[in-house]
Length: 122
Image (tube, rainbow, N blue to C red; front, top):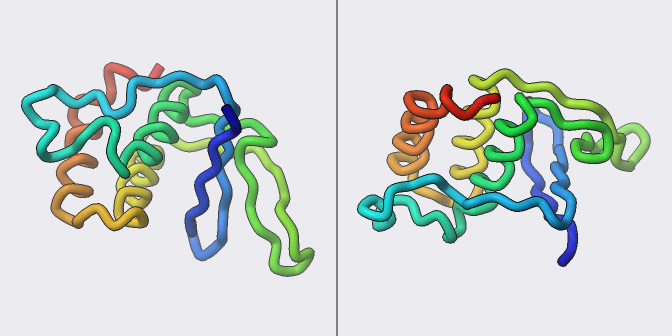
C-alpha cells in the first residue's frame, strides 16, 4: 500500500496533502439508508479520508503531510498546517466540489459535518 496524495487549490495556492500508508478510516460515516446520496466508498472517499485525518489530529497536519507549491522555487515546500474545525469542514466541501460532486451534495454533506461533527473533533 502506498501513501495517498491529494492536490487542491487553497487561497490561490496549489497544496498537496499526503496521508501515510497504513492510516485506517471508515470512509464517510454515513448511515446506510443515505448511501444513495453519499457513499462511504465512492469518489468522495478522498475528501472523507482527509477530513477524518484532520478531525483525528484536531486540525493539525505535521510537516511532511502538508506541502505548498512555491512558484518562486518551482518546488514543494513542506510545512505544518493547522485548521480549525470550521476550516477542516470547509476543506471537505471544497474537495467534494473539486471531485465533481454536485454543489447540492457537497453543501448538504458539509452541513452534516457541521451539525454532527463536533462530537468527533478530538
